[in-house]
Amino acid sequence: MKQQNFLDKIGIPSKIGWGYLGILIFMMGDGIEIGWLSPYLVERGLTVQLSATLFTAYGVTIAISSWFSGVLVEALGAKKTMMAGLLLYILGTIGFVGFGMPDLSFATMIITYALRGFGYPLFAYSFLVWIAYRSPKEKLSTAAGWFWFFFTGGLNVLGAYYSSWAIVYMGHLNTMWSSLFWVLLGAFFALIMNRDKLERKKDTTAKQKVKELFKGITIVQREPKVLLGGIVRTINTTSQFAFPIFLPLHMQEFGISTTTWLQIWGAIFTSNILFNVCFGIIGDKLGWRNTVIWFGGVSAAISTLLLYYSPQWTDGNVAFITIAGMLWGASLAGYVPLSALVPSLVKEEKGAAISILNLGAGLPVFVGPALVGLLIGTIGSAGVIWVLAALYIISSILTVFITLPGSEQPAKQINKSQTV
Image (cartoon, rainbow, N blue to C red; front, side, top):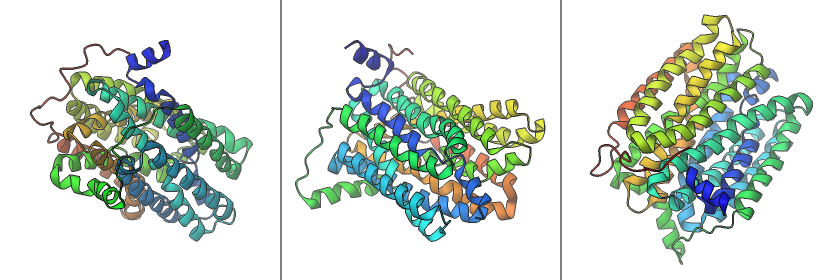
């Protein structure tokens, strides 16, 4: 009981506390290859453009899966949707690692890696809907901040640090195989140890379930601000998924090895997960919208440029690059209050609103590599960086127009008792 009280006090709904741990471990398994797969494939003979194509296909399925994750929870229930994500992830991994990677069969790799992409959004983003229903409104931004703490902590911190060790002692293929152990362990905590049941309305016919799914599309017509939130969320992490395609290669020009880059990447997202919680709380206190505008968009634009140019300015100084990266990682967390702001735009259909937000979270996995593939050959890596920085400024401008009905400063007057 003390543990439950403690979780509730810090903003984690105690009824689904095990689910947060499950998300951390599952996403660690999913994030094993994010920092090294592209340079590994390029070293084995793939071009940067083909690598970008592979990640783009992966991102397309992630975007589709992210879009429907929220409404699938409404139609099928949270645990069934998360289980579907787990099974798709396992099937995709077996095909990609077992049949695609050994012979570098690009046709097999692109199909199976794309199949794998359906997995984690159905698993993780469905849990975000669960959080929206289990959290009191005055703590919703904080609860979402904790979700992104565990999500990113697994994907980009534990995954990066574990893989920096595993690829040395286990090899690249075995490291990929080991992801299956971690996702199964995460699913155990999220689906079995977590005994809470999300009571959803029971749609008894297939027609009603299909209608529920289409709410993930039609809601943007009824609530245009939800669409703006989805666009801002897309811009939020576009650079996060663009950087792994070309930034490790850029760093190598200044003597930064792949292993060192993985450690920098881990430090970047250590900063990110800490600020996910901080900006969740700050958003509840100072206003969700203002937090996104200043601590998100403006800060991200500046730190994106700083991270790219820091190796050149410091002759590859690892400490300075790491600091610049940590500032960038913190700025990505400035967008956390979107997870409270967007579902609060609607009184009902929160699953549909979160589906648009989840689509925005999934699209960067496609948009980031696609931007690199389309632009790097013409404007170079420096040009891509300036495009990403400009997008962050645009996101700040768009956020100005995302206001709650009857409130210009959302969530500023509540949360008297939140502490860390």
